[in-house]
Image (cartoon, rainbow, N blue to C red):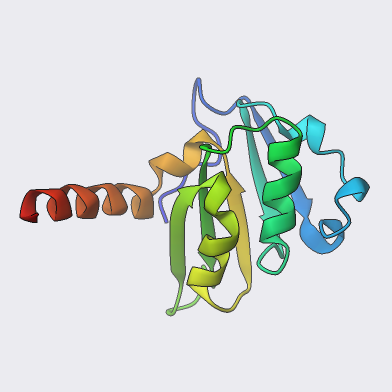
Length: 128
């Protein structure tokens, strides 16, 4: 997917969490993940994407933070959906079944799917 989990001046911290407790938002200290310099990678997050989104936004993470959902990454049917943190639940639904990881942070905007989506958006604007 061409997504660097760390990138100079954009990602000074990297946090890996599992989403198995994310539905109980009080079970996770979201405040430690709200820093713009932190890339958050959530394992097993498809079903709890809305709770992850809500927890991060409530902790102060900008709702416009780039986000990616990467499903079945090692298989031929891999799929990615990219957008903003506020769209995380919809992105999770877009990729269908897992396994999948969620990546929240500025580095998501450096992924190949993000760049492709930007090209598609420009092409659609030019065609209109």
